[in-house]
Image (cartoon, rainbow, N blue to C red; front, side, top):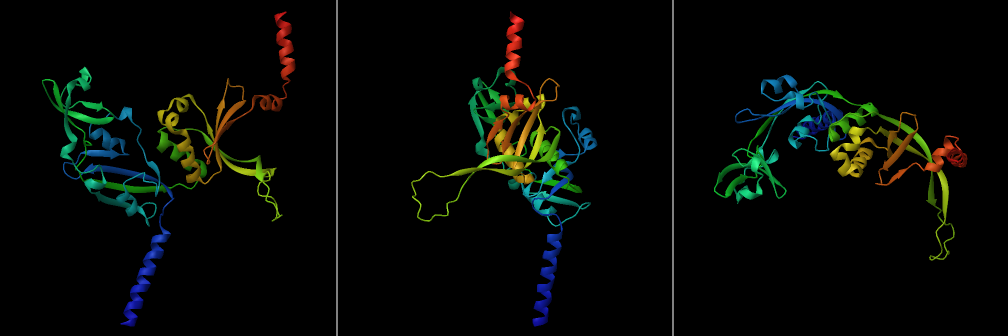
Amino acid sequence: MSNESETEVDEETADEEEQAEGLQKGDVIKLAYTARTVDGGQLVDTTDEEIAEDDGIDTEQQDFGPRTIVLGENHIFPDVEQDIYGKAVGDEGTVTVAAADAFGEYDEEEVRTVSKDKIPEDDRYPGAHVDIEGEHGHVETIIGGRARVDFNHPLAGEDVEYDYEILEEVTDREEKAQGIIKMMLDMELDVWFETDTVEEEQLVESEDEDEDEESEPEYETVEVEKDTLYIEATPQLTMNQQWMMGKQQIAQQLTQLLDIDRIIVQEEIGGGGMGMPGMMGGMGGAGGADIEDALEDADVDAEEIVEEIEGAEE
């Protein structure tokens, strides 16, 4: 019996070691996939443009190609993520995701009657997708002054079959950053990493144990190195809704996922080569370049500029 138990333990240990050698939480991968409902085979999502075209999807309105995801960050269904752990580049898999873990079970109570006046006139027909008091639904029927609206997700109650292939593990830092930004904002941006030396105020720890607790704390200026991700600001980024509404949260996620100290979003004005950076770090702080410092760095005398302008006016 003892030998059999030892054999079982050895096999479990070997399985764990094999699992640890494969892809794990925090790894960044490129994934190709197609997801369909189990009943009916309705296309839910795909990275393959040909499959989308065959299903009548307007491919001109969407970008296709492998998706960059970070394992462990809920960028895909948890059941699929669990199936990927321990696997390697080139591996494929098929996972059935239960309705409850996909888009939720169908809830009859989410089909409600509302006044048709809450629906825009152009959307008062069966099948129209509407937003009412912060909830999204689709119109089932309109009779008289009342409308029957289903607020369930269109795929609620559907099990989903998810076919995937692991195409690549992304290890290059810039490619990681670009892939994560693409996933978050659905846009491509130029990024690069630099190690910057900056000055910081740090608290000086007192060696005197008897020092008065009410005394003023002392600080000293020290130089520290900051691992920095630079992002080139573009008009598209400035107008991106996700960016406008949640740039601090996005910056915090990036600093954690990329293990960096801060992020600087750099804008070039007028093509003259002098950028005006705006910084967002992992602590949620924000800052920018001081104009006087910028003029000094550019070897420009502000007083001389003022005198020239006044002379020209005279």
